[in-house]
Amino acid sequence: MKQTVNLKSIIVIAFLFTTTLFFAQSNNDIVKQVQGLLEENYIFLDKAKETNAHLNQLIKKGYFENKEPLDFATSLTKELRKITKDKHLRFSAPNRDRTSKNKENSFTNYLSRYRSPMLRGFQLMDSNIGYIDLAFFGGAEIHLAKIDVAMKAMEAADAIIIDMRRNTGGSPTTVNYLSSYFFSEKLLLNTIYSRANDHSEEMWVTDVKGVKRPKVPVYILTSQSTFSGAEDFSYTMQSRGRATVIGEITGGGAHPTRGFPLDKGYTIGIPFARTINPVTKTNWEGVGVQPDIKIPAKNAKEKAKELALIKSKEYKDSMFKPLEKALLTLEKEKITKEKEDKITKQFEVLVKSNMLDEGGINSLGYAYIQQKKTTVASTIFKVNTILFPDSANTWDSLAESYLELNNKEKAIKYYNKAIKMDPEGDTGSNAKRMLKSIK
Image 1: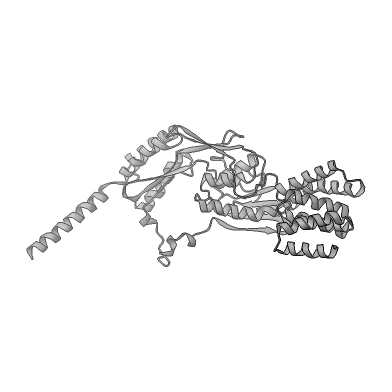
Image 2: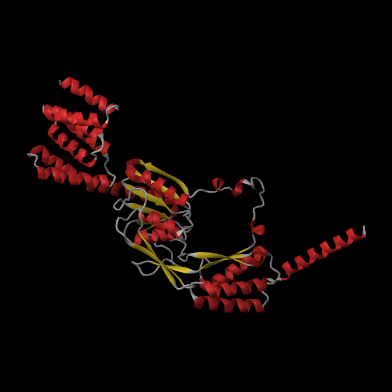
């Protein structure tokens, strides 16, 4: 019994000793740790030193003493920003002091599927105007895949609206990936300079898994809440003349940030690098992205749709008018090899721009057959076999056009080719029936 009492006494003493050590460290000690990290890592050394001098004055006055964790975190963050004006610089209280009072669903709150998604939604609206709503830029492979999914849906769009009004930033890599969808050239989009290791990282246009849209009109919606990586995307696209920014001046945070753990569970996010745009030679820190069209954020989407309606028609016309004109010439003049080659190149441009595919070209050819313009239709079908030579359907359609022109020899030749390519499929079966009818 005596041993048990002694053991309990030892446990109590140990607990009190540990607790005393934990709480013995004052808020001022934590501030000293912050000062060391700030001078070592903050992107501007002169600002770090000036801020530390300011904090020393506050320590002497006992400003941080006896403050509760949340009050301490709020106060220190405010004082850190007084000199730097840097909205990325943030001192945070321990997690236990930041947890929500609502304990319901506390387990599922840890699961990513129940958090706000990066991609709030995307759709193809009226008049082939695309719309993408992004909440943030996640830094994992799955987030790049989500960008691909959204941009896949935008392949048919003649103008794209990208909503950054509620986007507070994220991974520079993902920002660069989305930006790369709108450039075909290997351009330098940004340079990120880090003072701590005196290193510069260049962010170039990268390869993407989807179809690039280097000419499609783009509109970016912004608000006062648009921040960090969302500003990076907006600023980059605007500076390169690839987007019209509509809405409000953004938050003004251009510095990539790194988190550092501190004693007693506190953390601090310190901007350790700065973004340098190769066009402007500067960034949006402290001033925000200046919209091309400055209007209240709530009205930005409707304004973008209004402008996109006009530009999407111009874009569509710029892509299709040259081909339409060339095909009109074929209706009136003799078809030559030179003209066929020119038309093939025009179709090829449209295919590479994702404005046309095999099915679209095929439909166009049959539209000309219905108009009794079979010679033009035959040329279109021939182009389809050049651009999509492995498709049995293109050869079947070409054969049909020659049959309409009473050129049975070529019709038989291309029907046989379609059968060889798709002997058991629907296209092959149709070609067999047509051959029987010819014979």
